[in-house]
Length: 309
Ligand SMILES: NC(=O)c1ccc[n+]([C@@H]2O[C@H](COP(=O)([O-])OP(=O)(O)OC[C@H]3O[C@@H](n4cnc5c(N)ncnc54)[C@H](OP(=O)(O)O)[C@@H]3O)[C@@H](O)[C@H]2O)c1
Image (tube, rainbow, N blue to C red; front, side, top):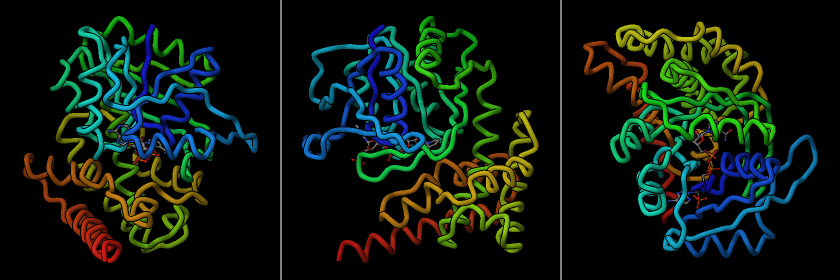
């Protein structure tokens, strides 16, 4: 089976590492020529797992290189970059091929379903924790990867991909109700990400600061009202999930905080923004999530204006 990855970042590196372990050197699409040169100039992509640094084997490719097509494309870019990444996927995914979304939040899978068809798009929910500095990725916490499709007509390659990733050592399993897990993770991210980003604090602030904890719980509870109205049965209690994740990843800095500090866009629209949007559609008020979205967007805009001066 021919597999390609779009995005040589943290998740992309974990996928390359896994495929290398399964005896596969994948083709990996990078954003542009400048990035390609940069990766080569620093000696390629690397991952650090349990203090051991591993050089990753990948054929780096530019979006303009459409000489080969693939059965499966794994999309490992941030949610706000998915639209751009899908331009590459459209050119290199075979007519009946499968595309998998590795993003947090709600939106990227839906876009892939609209672009390629319901039964040709699937999603992975990842609870591994990774941190990236330039092109070195550090595995901070082991977790698992749940993969599934919303279509009842499962793509014939889905289980093959899961088997390959599993052979490569990833803790991965198929779930037939991926939406429950996507929303469960969304609620936990909604409670941790914006609050740690605003407070500029590691995840343990949600446990150690009573004010932060109360705000995070209220944020999740607002989202829970939306989830209940949507009729989605979560795989666990999201408040317990929130506190467990904040405790377990206490020393980590959330991806949203890292995005803010590095003057990048954030995934707020795909996390708290989704709670706000769905809340509006369903007639549920979401004042706390609305406020958090505004603060994060304001922070991004402000830091961008400082950075661009
Ligand atoms: N990191 C984690 O622990 C973790 C855990 C669970 C879920 N996730 C989710 O996984 C997704 C990916 O996160 P990440 O941490 O891997 O992000 P990341 O480290 O920033 O990696 C994304 C990579 O995609 C590249 N990219 C962007 N647009 C592209 C395009 N059109 N073509 C090719 N490459 C492109 C980026 O390039 P540039 O560097 O040039 O921007 C970057 O190298 C996010 O939705 C995140 O929420 C992450």
